[in-house]
Length: 265
Ligand SMILES: [Zn+2]
Image 1 (cartoon, rainbow, N blue to C red):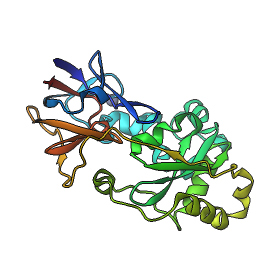
Image 2: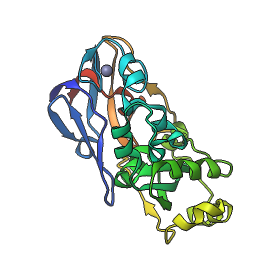
Image 3: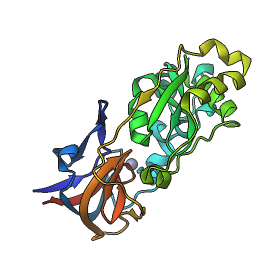
Image 4: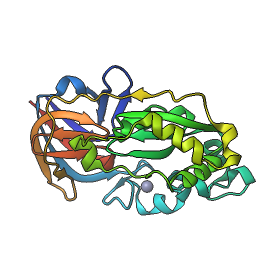
């Protein structure tokens, strides 16, 4: 089977095993059924930016340079919620967009991979955010009415929990000795008083199981930089946004918009 077109971030469905769908051009591939098959992909040297334009180069986070510096979707508050100002009526790039995004319920959560991390997500993005990160377990700690408060809570909890995930440790499935329930109760104790009114009942722990036929021991990153770059190998599993192939891992989200030829045998 051959496919041709721009790669999209994989979409996920929550269930006893996470189900992945990959969009390549106009085709949707149900990835769980393709584990064990031989994949080969070649980069065509073109990239479709978020703005819909075909661009020769990605600047950062899959945006072209112009989009990265002008579009509200690429603004610094996306990465740093504590910088949010829409609740004060102050525009960063586009107040209407920012009000729509920021003035809605957000969750502050703890997620477990090889460590326990703190993170922020919009109400509508749970549990997709956790599956995208490849978390084994996650639990919401706070539900707050806007993005700014979520950022404030995250900053306070970063003194006690990391806000990063090690993708290598996640893909190796390094064990984590800490209990998410204990971490949740600990987070409640150290949370600033002003935020305690937003604590949810719980902890309600979500577990994520990923479709992995064979665990990788060594993690080598496969990526597309120049036209003609290629990789091939048997697909052993999927976790987070990573395709785990017998000879390396490929981060689909990091290649969102890259135009490829894909062959599956
Ligand atoms: Zn663009």
